[in-house]
Image (cartoon, rainbow over all chains, first blue to last red; front, side):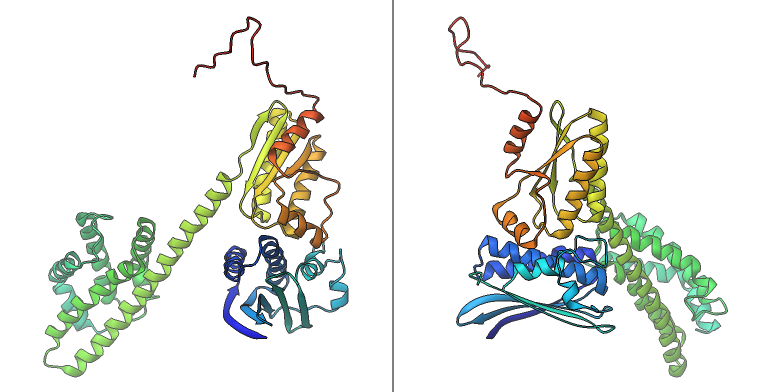
Length: 137
Length: 295
């Protein structure tokens, strides 16, 4: 896997979300991702960035364009220094929420991307990495 | 800053003001399109008088002391005003910084034969002016943020009109991101209008919402539930193909809510729910002549 471009974006408040979504759209358009794939990626990212703001108190997102077997894709890494997640398998279950949301953010985001990785250490923070390839698989 | 330099500066007040004004008027960055010269003169005079008064106070070097309070007020006013008028950050901060040059000149004249004292006085004057200039910048940014906040509020108000498309049918085109604050505005506007018009059907059109994630969906569901409690049925229209796929993958359950791809089909559905029939009028009138619409 090769990293073609890399940038960082700090997220501190709700207004940053719009900026971030627009930036993903630009990256996805640049590699020629179709509208459906773009929408899926942006929605997944939107779920994760909202989690980051709500539970992690903001953080940093790494936006990368990567390439594997000459197929480009977008990789996003969400890093926060929040309280972390106690029970990841439980958090990944549909309908489970410690807040008052629908509880679809994490599991929904996982279904919307090709690769999904979550690491969390209680008290230290959470890191989520997602990849969506240009052709969708 | 010692008494001697404060006195020297005070004695040269008129001269300082003249040179300072002259420099400002010469400066290419002068925005006489945003502010008249007489206004600038008045502002500068006011600032300079309070500044010289503060210099001769007991704690001249502490810009947080009481003697500097009037200066803070004046600078706050000036920078907030400039932020609103559209001055650039450079133009705003150079206003205070440009005074530094003139004050240095006066101090130089006064302490020509005492380089050690001159150095000390210049440093202390610089410290005061820098701290005031930082204050100007801080307030300037605050002023700009206020402008942004006001615009955000205006935008959320503008973008939520409730339209009466038919007797008993309301339409609400939602444009932009639906966050918690927007949802509140949208919901209030819709519920008020349902009461005011006694409408039975409300169409929420989300064609203009770029991303529908679980939070947006949750807000929509809440709005629909609230409208239902008031006896109005909601139809969500404007669900684009890519959004439909995304909603399915996310696992959001919208099966209890009427959804349509376009506003037109939502309107059609409302007609049938209200037993309204819309038919095309016959092309030819009873007399056989073509109707004339005036064109």
